[in-house]
Image (cartoon, rainbow, N blue to C red; front, side, top):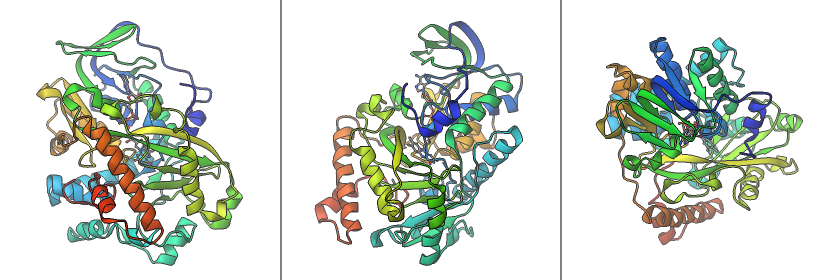
Length: 465
Ligand SMILES: Cc1cc2nc3c(=O)[nH]c(=O)nc-3n(C[C@H](O)[C@H](O)[C@H](O)COP(=O)(O)OP(=O)(O)OC[C@H]3O[C@@H](n4cnc5c(N)ncnc54)[C@H](O)[C@@H]3O)c2cc1C
C-alpha cells in the first residue's frame, strides 16, 4: 500500500517486515489480524501461559489498519456509560467502565515497562460543545454516572473549556481526566515488537483467504496455511465479511488531516499538552496536538461501505474534496491557525456496531473460533480489554474476562443491504444538514430532524441504540 498515515510513515521508517506465511505452520492459537486487538490478545495468551504456541497472521503490516491510522485518543468507556448500562445493567456498566479507565493507565505502564515510546501523554479528554445546540450533550451521561456514585467527569466553566482547547470556538464542555493520547502507530509497532520478543510468530502481508472450519482449524493464505486448535478473529471492520456476522457492522470511514509542524503557533494559542478534544456532533470532529507541534484532526461520517466491504476507498487519501472539507473544519475550529498549512490526510474504516459498543463471542457457538469487533471509533483503550477477553475465550477460561465478554454479545440490528447503504447515505446527509443548520444557530427542518434521528448514536446518548 503506497500511501499511509502520518503516524505509520513515522513508525515504519527503518523497520523490516515480518515474513509472509508460506508452507504449513502449526500453532495452538492463530490470531488473525495484527491491530491492537490481535496484538493484545497474542500478548495476553503468552502472559497467561508462556508455553502456548501463538501465531499472528496479518493482511498488511501490523498496525497497517486503523490501529496505525487513528486519532490516538486513548479513552475509557465512561462516555459510553448509558449504553453499557442499557446492555448490562448499572453495576456491570460501572465495573466495565472502571476496567476501561484502568486500561488507559495500563497502556501507559506497558509503554514505560517495555521502552515503547508511543508519545503517551496523560492529559485527559475534553468533551466539548462548539455550537449552542451541542451544549449539554454530555448531561445525561454525566448524571447517569453520578447516580452510581462515580465522578468520572469534571465540569468546567466556559472560559476554562476555551482555554484548554486553545480556541474560543469551544463554548462548553466536561473533562474526563483519565484519558491519554498516543502516537497510535508507534503503539501498534511497539506491541508487535514485544509480541515477537515473547515468542509470538508473526506473518505479515499474508491475508487470510479462507478459514477452513475443520478440526483442527486451518487459516489459509495465498502461499501457506496455519493449522491451529483455536482461532481468534481480530479483524475489526473486516469482520463484517464473516457470513454469521454480516448484520453486526456498518463500515464507515473516518478521515484525518494534520497541519505542518507549527509548535510556536500552538504555543501562542496555549495548546501544547496532550489533551484529546472532541466536539459533540454525530459527525464528530476529534483533535489533538502531536509532539512535533502539529494539530491533527479527524472527522467521522466519511465514505460508507456497501455490504460492509472494506474496499480501496478506505485506504490512502480520503475521496476527492473530503480532505479539504475536513481541513476547513480544522480552520473553523482554530481560526488563529488559518494560515498554517494542512499537509497530510488519510482515511480508515470504522467498525460501527448498532449499539456503539464492541461485541465478543464464538462463531456459531464453536469453542475454537472467537471474535471481537465493533469498537465504533473508540478502540485504542478498549482493545486492551478486548485482548484480555479474547485470550480468555481462546483458552476457554472461566474468569472475569470471559464473563465480561459474555456481557457484550453481538446484538445484530444492522439492516441488510441495500437498506444499510442507501438508508445510511440518506441518514448521514440528514445529519450533515442538521448539524450545518445548528452551526448557523438555526433549527433543522422537521423532516431533516426526523431522518437524522434514525442514526445510531455517537457520543450523545440515544436510548436503546
Ligand atoms: C481515522 C480513524 C481514527 C480513529 N481514531 C480513534 C481514536 O482517536 N481513538 C480511538 O479509541 N479509536 C479510534 N479509532 C478506532 C480505532 O483505531 C480502532 O477501534 C482500533 O484500532 C481497532 O483495533 P483492531 O485491532 O480491532 O483493528 P485493526 O487495527 O483494524 O486491525 C485489524 C487488522 O486485521 C487485518 N486484516 C483484515 N483482513 C484480514 C485478513 N483477511 N487476514 C489477515 N488480516 C486481516 C487488517 O489489515 C488490520 O490490520 C479510529 C479509527 C480510524 C479509522
